[in-house]
Image (tube, rainbow, N blue to C red; front, side):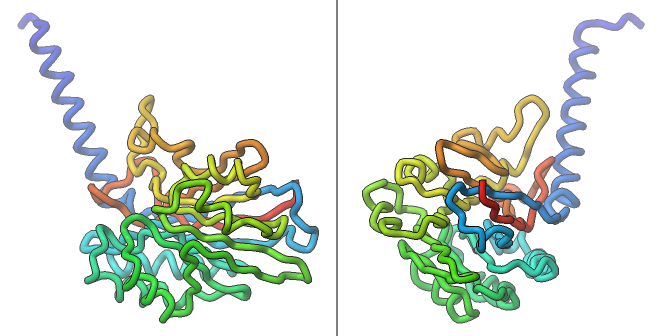
Length: 271
């Protein structure tokens, strides 16, 4: 039988559909559960020597829902506690679309988190401004809603300035970092805030929001995260270094491809 152009085209289409289906199935059954530890070193030129080596644990974008289970969150919490970080940052989006049915459950799942210098949380675009922060406070987290707090470690100051997702303008962020310590970290759910952080000479930024793209494909890359300065990992602009975490949960589709969920352990160094 002669192989016609139509037969070839049908074969290619069928193969493409099969590959896409297989990839999606893997991402649903396995990819979204392949939790791992990501380690990164963040450098800050004015970091006091006493703060060099401080380890920050970061969990973000948990998205507790019918599709992101208690066990998914509990595994991330347990893995974090094994790492024994000096302090812990929670980067927002604890639930999806503000679903209050999961506010209490996600807070309870996070309750075992402890660290010598505290657990600090900010809010993401999926978090309401009342129930979620109240639940986090009940389990021992300090919620920074357009606020700054100062830690004293080894006799040196480390400032954490946390902003809400909707706090975006430089003029609104500036008062939070005015007069801050040379070692200041901006906790901003949206990595696009690196623009304002750089303008304000903030040395370090911790963000989430992107999920690392959630689905990362050959050639196309992290297509869903193209509007962000970086989908995951570290980025330096001017005197500002930012780390963006892939997070724990999923949204829109319960699939991760080439983009596993993570617990991040970030070590501060003078650079």
